[in-house]
Image 1 (spheres, rainbow, N blue to C red):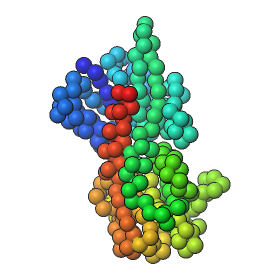
Image 2: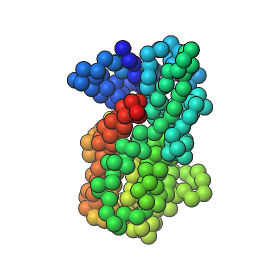
Image 3: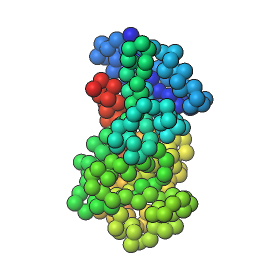
Image 4: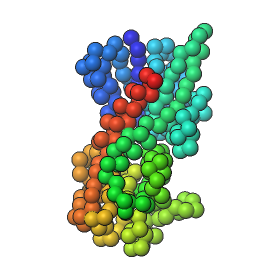
Length: 248
């Protein structure tokens, strides 16, 4: 039986294990999906070595960047953003293993947001600077949209802080993507500190969160007439992409 799995820490709320095991059951696939909750990335190779029938992994926080030094190769898009969430495990002769890193978040996000984009959506604000935000940046770049990161503190040149979001910037950057955990259940009364009163029906607000279904970030956008979408479809699309990566 082939095995697939997820590495991260902690893994209390894992979408992948339920999704993939249900897929295997419904499609009659002789495989199983398990969680590998490892307290340190240094335990990663132990997972590979102790599971000879393991052919693919998903990677979640905090290891999307930490796992890269253990890999043999990176997909070109993945190399540019420096964050991995899918690993293809190729079993070679004499027990040798080749590990290739991919980022299916790029695929899932791009496919999910693309149908909502209008000609006036030329520039985007990306709220947050973690691994997911890097995938979003690359996805928007692939779609021809110029992006700027927004952070609570000034971390690097070219980034903005929330205090620097002037009416002029808000009018120019009509796509806003929330890559922060603000507003995720159970802390549903929180949202990124952007000037919501500057939003218009020309704005598109995309929240990577999907629990709750409508976050406070989305609700405040809708009150100003903005188009909104949560990250559930992206989650499903990136899972489809992971399966295709493991089997191409």
